[in-house]
Image (cartoon, rainbow over all chains, first blue to last red; front, side, top):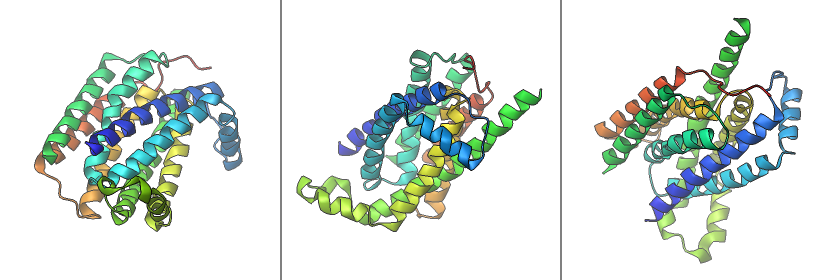
Length: 124
Length: 138
């Protein structure tokens, strides 16, 4: 039961955090200069966007939940199961970020979900 | 042509960094946390002791450093590519995690488990053949 709750937190909070970070980075704009100083400047600019802090908070919760569940289960089980966030991510990308998720992408996400189910069953 | 090729090259470079450092980070965290003890037996009164065990583990810190490297690459790629493209495309890392878990940590992985991971990678391949950006450039 505790594992299931922790896995739910990893998936829900992790995906929510990633969507917030994406929103912040889209606000910052496309990165074209990859020199170290320029990258640091981009990171500092991103830190001024509130969405980045909301995203980091949610990802922190997901991180500590991941640490807890890794103390119970094998990493080769935990990490593939967290792939459930692909379905949540496609939905979030479509509804919160206005991305056009093509039928091919949906098909890929569906196959990923079937794979996660097999991983879950393979553990039993 | 050059703009589109450049976009794909920088996208694939960032994805490569992500699929190396995310699994490495998770495996190191897994190794560190196994030494801390199962969360099933964590009592609230022991939390300060557990937190001190977590943050004095070298494996946990190496794992955090690897995940930070992953996170910087992730932030950069999200500045131009769609979230719904990046997230599934980086899931090839799941295969890398399983391989590291099997060979480095000695975890037992059943044939069905391996099949599931391969199916996930097939899903990744399908998603990876879609355009990296479907929204307007800001």
